[in-house]
Image (tube, rainbow, N blue to C red):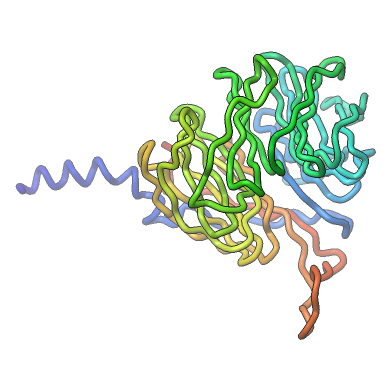
Length: 344
């Protein structure tokens, strides 16, 4: 091989491996949040520069330009998280403690309606084409569908498993939801509001997080047997796997960097993998966070990632059950791309 060819070959591969060389993410800051109650999903509105953090009996709203708390959404008993219906100026809260989905005016942060769902609605999908909301109920394995604008019921159907995390491809008319106890993904047709298919994600098991690359039609599944699985969203075929840490909860994908994320609270890491091609994943960083930092969201505008976590009391020998949180320690951890790591 001549030297000119080697230089050209290197230039072609540098963008693919720049993240691995530069350790793409670094810690920026912590945003303290008052209160010591539990937490679950985070979500982000990139255009409005808002971060929504579920926190016990409320959802805390943070301005991502100043990293300051600017409001809260109340009346959300046992809340798991908030899903955005940006085209309607609405948000939808999964109120697992009262088996309802709240409709929130994003301008005022006030709940304007509650719709009865099944038992413990845990994750919610919004279809902006048909303006329907899908509540996936963890307690009974049912899906509840209603009109976003009116709250009128549309459909109810069994999923065939316990739902955990969902993503939407509205243009192709699909909603995908993890069936955690079945090692499978349920595929829902948004035109008929019915279960269309069920795909195995094995060798992945007991999955939690789910994210999607809409352009290449790839799903990224965080599994608790320490795997991130990449699945073809048109056929259900498992295309690639990479190792991740223990205790995965959330997954994310940034189309600007082609990076997929799995946050694992058991060992306090985020595994960051690059989608080198529609059939290849490469781990480019194992980012150290904090033990218990299991939920995460990605801002595709700034490429920042956010994780929620408190500190925990030391576990005594022989102690069982979850460790107690240390009062006054709940916060959001912020990480950003390092200098020289470009979006692509």
